[in-house]
Image (cartoon, rainbow, N blue to C red):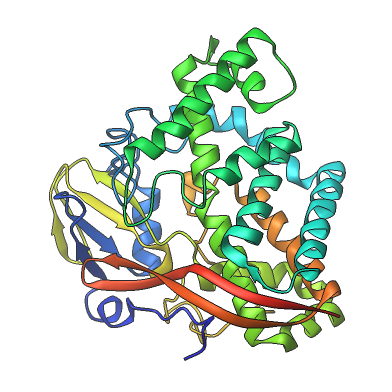
Length: 385
């Protein structure tokens, strides 16, 4: 098996039953595995709720490490629509030419940095740095602040060997509290200040609501972007002809971005809390239990995707759900797509080949399933074109 391959552990159960089961901190989860059923559940927010106890829809559950509601992630309609209308324009800024130009320069610079090195550990020395530097653009704050975030390491809610780490999470929460106070005392053009000055339904956001948006912004796009970058590097190391093709056919880059994100599905699943007794896939589900929308399984659904376990860079039909589905689609999707698009373009122009020197896979334990989500570390050598 290739080092870059991410096998589909859900295939057999998806075809046999359509759902899987796992336990998460004594709070069981029914995993919805097929694309069609997943979409139905994602649409049905009245039965499958996001606005439950803060932290409960995340898997692993974060109820023991936070009580701040992430906004608009943990808010249901109709309130969700109002919060989303406020933040959507800000998170669409990656489409602006000035934003793209600065992000392109950032990515060119870091690719030049790693090309000058003998070997590079991709997760911490490339993907984490790239993600953190790009986040300064999204927040519209000084580039130098990225060094603080890089110092936190890859995970903001986890430490070595711990699925959840409350002490580490408090580093992020305390940091955000401090930055909100600074923005109150001296408003600027950053995201904190925009939120503090904004209103939803005629009311200014509370400090707790601002904090909820900021926690989501920091945590939601960290592991996912890092996994996408690292997995892409591993794939191109084993498929250098794909870099050549992207260079020769730049018009397929947008399709390639969607295909890599479909295949890697950097976020495996997201939960919902059931508001009434119901059933999915002819399986009874009780009120106040949880389901998960298993994006990673749905993105390999053989009823929808031809050759689902192959990366087809110019895949024509690609209704993947790696960024979620329905009203709760990923707030940072535009930013993540822009990062990946520019990264692919830059690697194709500057990199001839990549050698994998050493690696350690990141395997998620999901009840009856074990899923490779990426790498804990990946050491490579980049070669200039």
